[in-house]
Amino acid sequence: MSMKCSHYRQAPRRKISAGADLHRFMTRVIRWCTVVILFVVFCSCSFVAELLNMEAAQIISWSPKRECVAVEEVPYITVCFSNTMNRPLCEEAFSLTKDADKVRGNFAWREQDSVLVFSPAVPVSKGCRYALTVAATAEDIYGNSLAEPFTFEFVTGEELIPPEVLSHAPADGAAGISPRESIRVVFSEPIDEASFYSGFSLFPSVSGGFLWFSEGAEVHFLPVADYQFGRSYEVVLSREISDRSGNRLAEDFHFSFRVQEVIEPSIVSVETVEGGRVLVPTQSGGGIDPSLEIEKNEKFLLTFSKVLSEEQKIDLLNVDPHTTFTATWNAENRSCILGFAEFLLWNQVYRIEVLGQTYTFVINGPNSIPITVTGISYCADLEAPPGVDKFVPLQFAGNYDFSDSVVPAFDFHLHHAEGAQIDLGSLLKSLDITITPACISLVPIDIRISPLAIDPQPLPASDESVARFFCTLIEDPAVSGTITFRLDTTLQDNLSNHLAEDFVLLVNN
Image (cartoon, rainbow, N blue to C red; front, side, top):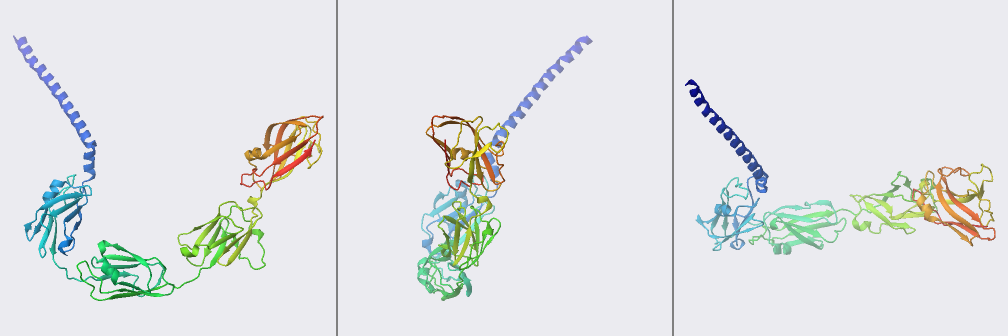
């Protein structure tokens, strides 16, 4: 009996345990689904956009903006917001009242729903007080409402306050004004442009144009011709000038300024950009200073006594003999870098002419020395023991027997700038060996340049190189002919110095 009772009590406990497991499983499922849904919502573009646009919307402009306006100036009311707005909420928050009575009208939107335009059903009336109100319930598309309600009141009628000149430039009595200085006038309110044009005078007269700013309250006169150096000018704003309500200036307004005195610029110095070597103006009968050692790619810094105008920079420089050059001016137009489109020529005398001075120099820098061929020598057998007869210098139009060639080679002896290296590619391109008629058979094998060349004779100095031409050479004893060795000016070194002129050596066989 007690066993049955015990068995009966255990059965319900197993059912409760299974229900609890199911409850925990469903709880976990719901939690995961919630996390996924929140993640999707958070990552949606609109949600992120709302997070990034949580600042209160603002009214940044409106019209009319003056407290007293003529009725013809109010065909409609505009309110400009800082954000794209919620149209229905903004239209509900907007109101225009006339002497406390609400004005009916139509709404329109511009600039991607950031500008509200309200057109009254009945045009505004003269002599009435209007109140423009936007309640704080107006919201942008992100749900941000106005930080505070907005109200502006204006009266339609005649505005009787005359305009005033608040500021002007140049200041009255200012001196040292540049030849193209603009004249700027700021009024207390927008001005009728036609009245300004007839009421503005400049003595002496200078041609120019006008630019308007601040909705017509600021005007700039821009001269299109220079004022005269050292001359005084007077600006007169006559009382004909009026605001847009027809109110004129209370009295004529005058101010004057004086233009800077003309000071002709002079050349202060000419020096090399690299190393700062100073060139001295060439005196009558003076010579050239060869110690300057000007390189072929040199640039020159020219410094002047004063700032140069754009007109003064025209035709300022001349280089003789004629060479294409560029002048790069600094921001103050007080100095410039004179550079050349191409390398200057070795041993050529040049003259820079500027503001009546001449600066003479010669291209003789150590890194600009052109390549020259000092000779060609022939070796019949490179493997033979060294000796005085192993390398035979070839003479122009000399007669030579090549029948004893075993391991032959030709050495080309080249002179160049100290420390320079001959460009192998240009050497291969410039070298030409012509045999007429076919007195020998010459087949090229390789070409090397010292120090890779083996045992060149004589050994090259630091400003020399030897290019060794390896070949096979078979002489036809039955045929006599001429062998012509040629190197053209495409031959160059790593300093961009070329062979000064074509080299030709002709020998007989």
